[in-house]
Length: 339
Ligand code: SF4
Ligand code: SF4
Image (cartoon, rainbow, N blue to C red; front, side, top):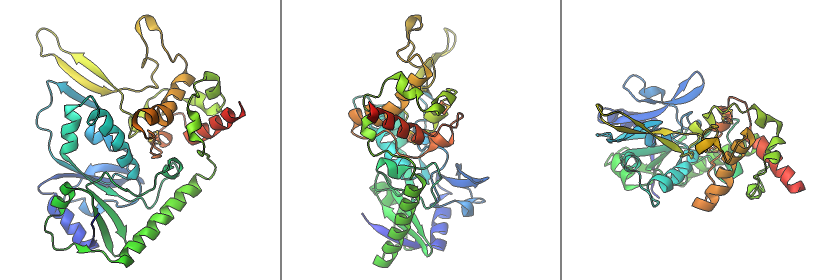
C-alpha cells in the first residue's frame, strides 16, 4: 500500500480545494464530543483529526435511519466521509456482506457505497468505553478505506487504499513518499494508543469470548445485576456500526402513491420478534438483551466468519440504563465456566 506524506498547511489547503466541488463530512467537536458535520469554508480549520471515532456510526451515511425504497429515491449524490475509525471500517465488512455481497442485494445501499469515498483516521485518544483491543482489533485502520490519514507533529501520512482514493489525491504535487523515520513515528503513536485501550480495559476479560456460544439460558443473564436497568430504548442498536435489522413500512392509499420505507429496527424492542397472537421467542428483557450479545459474538461469527462487535463502545456510551456490557460479558463468561 502506498503511503504519502503532506505537511499540515498543504493538507489543509488540499481539503479546502475539494469542498467547492464535493459534499465532505468530517468530525467536529461539540462540547467535547465528536459529531459529523459538513465541511464549509468557515469551519474547515476546526476538523478534529485522529482523536477517536465520532458519535454517529459510519452506517448512517450508507444505511440511513429512514429511507424510501419504493419508489426509490433518485439522485443519491457523491459524498466524502472523513473520520471513520478502524472500528467503523470493520463494521463495514458486515454491512457489505448483508446488503451488497451476499445473496440479497440492496440497490440503495450498493449505490450509496459506490458513491461514498471514505477517508478514515487513526485514533490517538480513545474514549474510556473503547475496547477494540479486547475483540482483536487495533485503533488504526488496516484496510477497507479509500484513504487513511495519520497525524504526526510534522503533518499527515496518507495511506492510499483504493483507486478511488488515488483519483481523489490526483496529481497533487504536495504529496511525497514517506521516509522510514516518519513511519516509525506513526508506529510509535499507534502502539501507544493500543496500550491505552488495553489499560482502559484491564478489568474486563474476553479471553474465552467464544464460550458465549450456547449461552441462551435466561437465568444466566439475570446474574449481572445491571441488565435489569435496560429500558429497551434501542440506543445500543441504533448506534452500533454492525446492527442491520430494519422494518419495511407501507404507507399510501388508493388516492396516494403507495410508498415503502425502510426504517431501523431494534432487537431490544419487545415487539421485535413477536408473532401472530402475541407469542414471542424472547419474552423477557433478559432474553432480548442476551440475544443482542449472542448475535454479535456467536451468530455473526457463524454466519459471516467474524464477530459483529468491533469494540467501538457506542452501546456503552449511549446506554440509557448505564449498562457496561464489558462487565456483563465478563460476568456471564465467569458464571458459564462454573457450570
Ligand atoms: S456491539 Fe457495541 S461496542 Fe460492539 S460494535 Fe456494536 S455498538 Fe460498538
Ligand atoms: S441502550 Fe441500554 S437501555 Fe437502551 S436498549 Fe440498549 S441495553 Fe437497553
